Length: 424
Ligand code: GDP
View 1: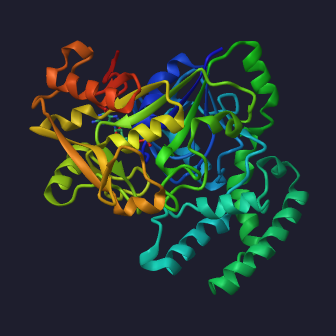
View 2: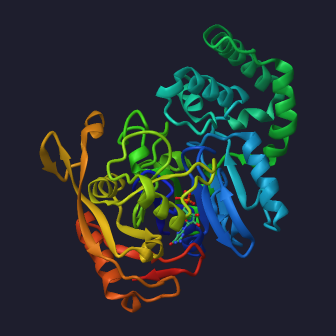
View 3: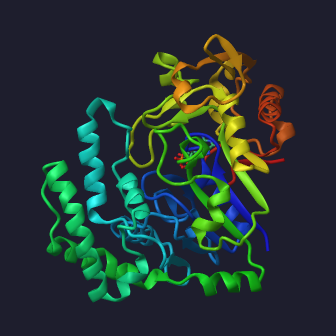
């Protein structure tokens, strides 16, 4: 049995979905353990191009069981729509290859509404939420004001529980935001449309994991977003509301006793960031537009243009450490091929001093990048499959980053397709 977590090292969108899709052939089970439908993993394979939001990226592999663990914000509407879409492209999805933990809390219809109402109230001070209800969901989860997926099986008890929460939630919706309250009829419609079709996938995972252990199955844990968006270690308050850190993977998956043998940290060859918050190595203007175009940097969920910048050694080293990464997958190296010189942010300047330590969140706004330039390679590398066949400058760029972040770069991705990878 070998367990591996694939996690993001930076702000998210590092290419985790692409790495899970590649690596999942060595694993029997792929588990999503945190987050919700607020970000997207882009996967390109023989079925087409997919922006997955809640389904694990293992669903395309025959023989792989995909699991949505208790740590995930299970939004019945989003999952059912995603299941239907993926099925329409010829992918087989049944309760045998997709399992949802009965202990996962359900994201309820008012969570998305509250996200929108709060962002409207904040106006220009908004956090840049994707409005998928994730922050309201997690705050309610920790207030114990959500229902568990497994409660769906007893409709009478489920509605009694839900009605109590609805009455409490309507106080906020009406009195704080002056909006329309949710009605029981709306909840019943939501239940019929999305919860009933989801029920065959929901169950207790204990026996499943026991069986995995007995049969020495290999489990891959798939994270959403990255270290810098982690609720505890990220760029507070511009973080997500769950733990994006590998150490949380066994807990959010439903098997807290499991050990991770490997943690693959996914890092982009430059930096991108969606939404608000400090982003020290950010570029603006024409240079930024060029990089954004070259990398196709538009959000998988929202289509929002991503903020772009140079590779950030300070943030990446911090992210690698917090994730306990045992190896790094460096993605999108091919995107940098057009540059004559490649800027790299090697240190931060904070309060007049250079530092290579990632600052406390409230100091990040003052941080300025210290930039060094590495030579570019100026040719297309997307067809290359062996490290030694890369132009010397591209090899040097990878080796420079490896040394600077203190972690072995095992994979170098040179294109979005499954096979566009160099394994060292
Ligand atoms: P994730 O959320 O971490 O899975 O990342 P996203 O899917 O949001 O963003 C990664 C994007 O980069 C997707 O559009 C991928 O298809 C694409 N991608 C991943 N690896 C590479 C690569 O090595 N080169 C290029 N050109 N695109 C890549």
